[in-house]
Length: 432
Length: 168
Image (cartoon, rainbow over all chains, first blue to last red; front, side):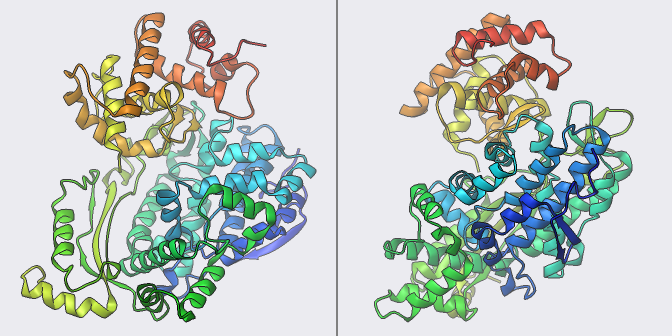
């Protein structure tokens, strides 16, 4: 059966996308895009608070989801033509999984998600699962068009019976990253963050073990992918100011959650989320709701002074400002307990406790993997026939020289106290 | 970043079943950590890991953060007869080690491949979707280098343990 380059047999609509140009949608995709639960993604920005640093970074999970679906179509239709995918319905299944992969994102995406993950034990993938399971809209549409919603969930969770599909959706060089790297580079203007998507796809293959692999002539495109990713981590995703605004927003959200338990969209448990999905209230759980709620709290007389201070700092762009940044690239995992830089940050944090209040200071330590050097997910390069080797062992690739990790080690202080703290640290000889 | 107690349990199990000779800097070591982590979660207790189905079998992205810690702990646990992992993990560890020791005895030794087959077959029987009607052939279809006799043998072990269902 014929499928187009986008992987579709019938096109119901075309949407113009700033990255990929016209994107074709099938009937089932159009029906899903038109649900209120999917439209919620129009109100969740892809890069949370990045627009505080890059004014153009206001693109949304909506456009990224449609872009990821488009790439899923390009890759899977190619694999269908090459005989690695046998059923054209599987092309549609992969497109649907890509379309729905971010359906469970929290407001302000990665800024708030750690609160859900570490405080409530819920991550956005689980919210995606329950959204598909519990939303009558999504389930009915999938069923009406002959798709089993459990198959879509299985692909999203990487449990689908075909490991190849799981790799396409979740591995080191996957569909999600292929879209967001280009989209984020475009909207931030970080020119060295972009990738050669068409070369990557043109050289994609499947090796003898059933792994997604790249032909040796595509090595340069993979090299570029990793370099772009490394630059984007440093220049965008872990940019010092951007992280500062994510941290202040997270702290505001934590306090709102503690103090305003009667607000129905400040979920405490997965049961609350399920309830909101069933009632339809989940569609209002987005960036704009949170901004509005923060504004209401800021204006109320009863709100605690500290919370008002944080909200005001957020709105007036006077949030956490970095005071110490000893981040570095490394090839080894960060050992937080023995790292000298982390110890120094902790001791400085203690030394300024008398001039800043607890809500005015925050440390940020993270160990970011630039390359998933793992046999299960590392990209493989095919040289002859079906034999492949991990790109980290490929002598014609520069990936082996790319640092494996980015250790982020910073201390932030609220802008209003920044000058005072700098002065104090200089007096103590702790800052040059 | 790794949970030290969980890393300690994984290291001790690797040591107990005799796979501590695998080079900790190799891809093989990472496969061992992944498969032991999966078996621990399926046979011992839920340690909160999420596994996907890949061509090398079950894989958890979270466990990537454990490779280094497990490698550092391995030589330390080697000569420890008993370690207190905490109330919950103690039972979990004992159940997993007993299961694996029985498996080692059943197949006559353990290596990377037999561990991968064991973990993969558990995943095929319990976690992948759509659920295959014939787990043995499903696995053989993915891993052509395996022999049918061996996979069937492991399958019978798992039926015996009520982990895999009897063939239809």
